Image 1 (cartoon, rainbow, N blue to C red):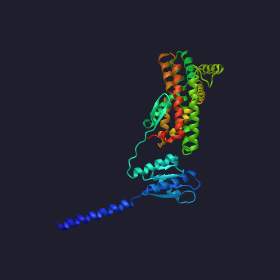
Image 2 (cartoon, rainbow, N blue to C red):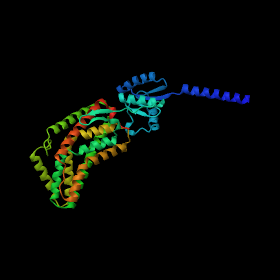
Image 3 (cartoon, rainbow, N blue to C red):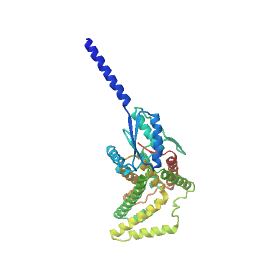
Image 4 (cartoon, rainbow, N blue to C red):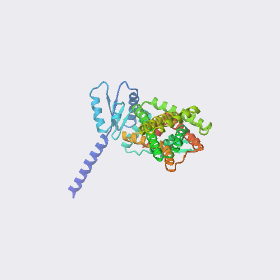
Length: 378
């Protein structure tokens, strides 16, 4: 019995010793890759020094990648280990924690790195409420909003604007005079597809530009300023609203020229000539819509570039946005095809959608400048 008690005691002493040793030696490793000529790297250096004082458990290993030829090779190993997408490679600073990696550095990134350290230490990170006050709508908790919801709202509001609406209604009215569902399907379908595809290409170009410059703060601030100006302009449009008027092309001669152009497109009996004409018309409509609603695609693609998602997800969100953007076209052409009657949205609807769009884009612009972390989802 004494031997048994002795063995149990020895076991607990050895177990306690190893447990204490492991607890004392367990470190949270941070691998920091930087360049001496990078100002953001210098800021993160200071941040990591303070973080080390705050959390003695962390162990920071730094690698300078411009003067040391071995460190870029080590960085490549970390890229492979953490499955870093190709589009995020080659940027500094880049920081690897036990569970996540971070490319670039600003105040927002610093907060995320610290939260990651807290999680590694076993602390529970509460999800902060992100409440803002919006005129006419009251207090809204943005933390409960998701990227799909934001895509839904911006995509629909982007599609409903008077500048594009009058072009669409002119085309429909001329198609209805032909009394041919086949012609409506051919011309309408081609127009919708071409307009949506061109808008998708336009937004893809913005997205790729913002992904390439995602860690350049001045770009975020400039987009925010542009969005604020655009939002104020849309609110002013609401206050000075005139039914059925597009102020970008508010000239009777321009409308007459457009009507003549559409008539010429519908006149040829040869299908290829009609299709080419419709595609050129869709391109022209996209140019008009750019002046009316440029704030939406620019703002949305900038917010989308914030998100840490895969490349295919970026384009799926753009596709979803464009489907919503074309929703008014689907409704108008669908109604015309099945009933051979014209359908349009009321001026009152267009007026108040302009107000909502202006307020929303104004608020998003302010958030983009002062609280960009509110626009990061998931």
